[in-house]
Length: 217
Ligand code: G3P
Image 1: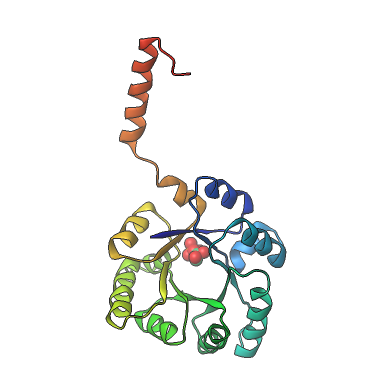
Image 2: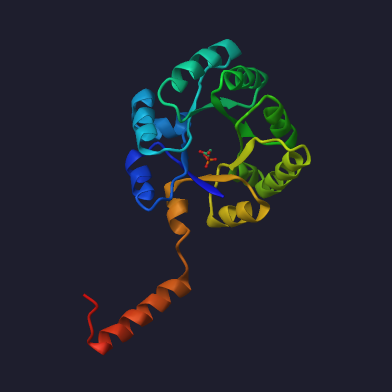
């Protein structure tokens, strides 16, 4: 399973990338706002840092405008994936941009039927938002399970990016289901190392090591 960083914070991406942890990056208008950066500039910097797909989202609502924005974003770098919303206009833009050879990430997916349509429109990626489904008392991971089954039934190549990830449990469940990618905020990705028994075990080893009076270097 691939890990994408769901952020436009270049320092956070660089820190995770130092341990080879970042297979790609996803951004959206809210994350660009949070970064305080110009979308074209920050996206170009991210693309230079990360070899894998970097999603940059269109903000137009009509298909022709989305296509024009998508073409401009795609020119930033070869590893751009243009992100479009799961609307009829978004699907139309997805089909056109995909046919032109641009990677497309269809976002704001909340149902299996939406994911089916995105795959038929040639999406490279589908982004179901699990956390936001959990927020309204539905089970976001059930949707991932359904999409995995549907895509496998028909051998769709569209990759499932589990998005709106809020916890390390979302990551585990995604891997068990066989999602292709999890995109998570840096704080969730960093928590993946945490375990109280690891922490306690390390403390005990360090205490015993100090008693030996030895040094390795
Ligand atoms: O990847 C989508 C993500 O950025 C949305 O997350 O936590 O705002 O639902 P959230």
